[in-house]
Length: 182
Image (tube, rainbow, N blue to C red; front, side, top):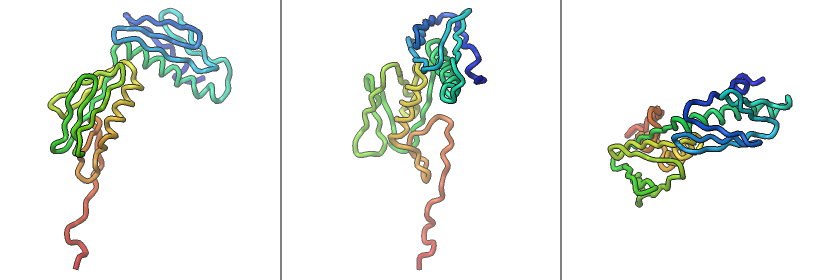
């Protein structure tokens, strides 16, 4: 049995969970989320805990067991506390500002980029170079952060671009001036 899959998901105070067939719904202070349980797995509610169990020992079902439990646990954590992802903008003239439900970015292109935020994701920008994304759905939050970073990935030569907070960008040495020229 999966080591992660067999652990029950504890339901914290202030979170309501409903199991309807192959769907688990959670509602808390940060919002409402739902997660489908894959075929071959069942979700049960017992003593303020969610148990994910599998019917067979098929290889595909075994692979999905731990994943389904982790997705349900992330959903419960998300509606209770929410998740946060920080990005930093590095580069002269590179900046961001909030524009309604979108972010306007100046990233060295000939035009500003308007990045619309998905439903359930909020943004906070500090000093025009630090972006903090918050939301209840961990997958949507991570995908949004990845799309933002992809607009101008960190350059290995100068280090300019959008990077995750704490990300170490591996730097390369550029061409040496006059090396080999005669």
